[in-house]
Image (cartoon, rainbow, N blue to C red; front, side, top):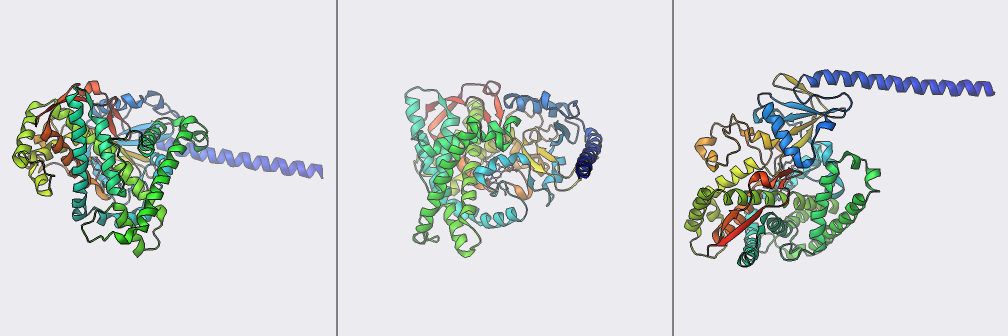
Length: 500
Ligand code: HEM
């Protein structure tokens, strides 16, 4: 009996070993084939199994490093990086990135977005496939321009609060970190527009919700750039992981409470009347028509708006202040334009006013070229593709480097120069549409694009109406950091002179 048991055990061990050797050999063959295919594409020299991990700089220097590489390889259609045994296809030229944007299949986000799932679930930003398509259909009407007009009031009101705070700081001769001020303002705008809630971030920095939003964004970024924090079972046990859970609870409790409250008063909000509505009300109305939409689905979307809709706009408006404040000739033109549209009036900006601020439009576009708030975004490829004679593999990650696509000398001579006139209609008419993608492109472009541009215009016009901006540092001194958004390492210090 013992003999047979021994034979049986040995056979099992043997089968397991053979199976493991078989699987490993298969993986090795697969990896070797991948090495040959991927390494045809140029990139940093790599070490098998380690890839380029040892060469990559910290997030503080990453933007500089990736830019240098992209400039070196500027004539290549794309380049590659290896994170261990995982290849990354980096797209740094718009004409070649088109293959991703125009495909109806390559719409799945890369695995790095999974770190956002605990907070945002699989909402519009992070989902894919049928779930994403259904959400996009549901949410698109809520960004209709007539509905956006309603949010113009929210933007004007918050801009007035911002300008009053700035005026106070100016009379006290204080240096102002405009990035922090605009972040608070943009959070107030999005919370009121998305949830109908005054979180008062501009005047109350102690709010638990406001602090949790800032902290959780920071924690997601730390995790994103530190592979040691990637496995869930390790992360949950770390101090940062516990802090993440704490923030998560504050944020989810807040949005759940708001959803329940707004739902119970929904009948009082006549969507066709002039009463102020929030995106949330529109989603709750949609839920009444389609019972398959759950409160959790709605929470995912509301949290997604808050996440996507404040740091992005704040960063864009802050870089604009920096660039305006260091280009007096641009600032002069902006002052003239704003004075001619608004004169001495203290009224709110209307949609017609915004249409007349055409030079401000150019300045915003050129700022987003130099500092696209989302400097890179990732996709998991759903099909093999051919790019400039190279094979790009299904199942792997593609990174679209908007920051460098916007510096392609073919479309932007002297690319580091701030020159709003690049966006005059006569200068854009022959430009490849994928050479300018601050809001991404194709099916997964930014749904909040018009909202964001409207908000930026209102905030900047209000600041410029009252003040002259003076930037205190050069771009190099500000050390742009490429996290989830591109932001200055330690803020953007400016001074303001009161004009009126
Ligand atoms: C200047 C401001 C903004 C910029 C530069 C920007 C940029 C982007 C980019 C590049 C993407 C694609 C990201 C990716 O593929 O990973 C995106 C997606 C998205 N953005 Fe924005 N965004 C801005 C403001 C906003 C605002 C204000 C909202 C909401 C009110 C918003 C909501 C979204 C959503 C929901 C998505 C996901 C869309 C989808 O996948 O279908 N964004 N944004």
